[in-house]
Image 1: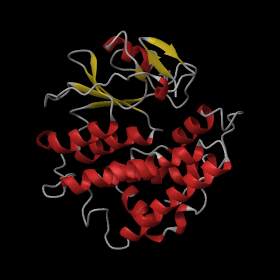
Image 2: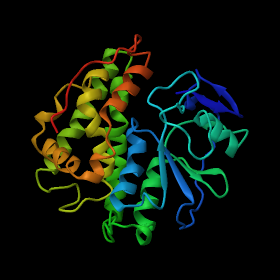
Image 3: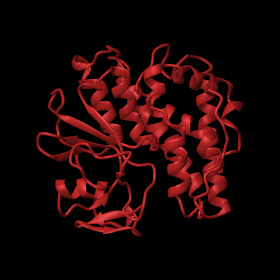
Image 4: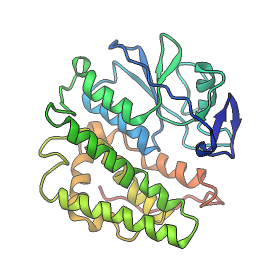
Length: 293
């Protein structure tokens, strides 16, 4: 992943090579129309806070826009279809440098932007999603408790487990550069899916009969699995539809209008197959597979 180091763009350096990374994690003010979420309709991590906003009905409180599907040598960018309605920047690099001219770290989505102070206030998807779910209830049109009292510790623990064993793990599978690593990461990913399928055989959602924040950590990976991960990342030890409980769960969630509106399969495919030149050097976008949900 390309990074900024002391405000200079390095397209061929990974964040792990940096001596330190700057972080943005400011306290938020509960104020309508103060913040803007920059996200990507392709990115599973940016999908988390988008799902929270849509499910709680916070669209009139926090504005939203997506970056373009295609990345270039400058990383995530805006184009004529996916513009920056707030600062009119050309790419995410500019947003980071407007906030901190000597910024060092990843340049990625999601970004929560303070429209009053003209700066990034948070760039951690887990933090943004949790903050919105826990603290913005009073401004939500839909009064859903995504982090119910008494379940918060279990929800946060499961979120972390899903992040490590599913959300990120599928990238480890797709980006493996030798057979040993691919086999290891693939086995660990599908062991996690086996475990989740068993869990969902005992309850409708991950924490019982109501949707919680944990469901919005798992769902983004599931909706990308058939169209992208099984093909592009070779995550095909099993097909997702072989998991009876996981597939029932996926189909149930995506039938909800507010959730379905966050899913753009064509945008996802265009991003992954075009942008990952090291595993798809000719950027050929496959005609299929089609999804049945």
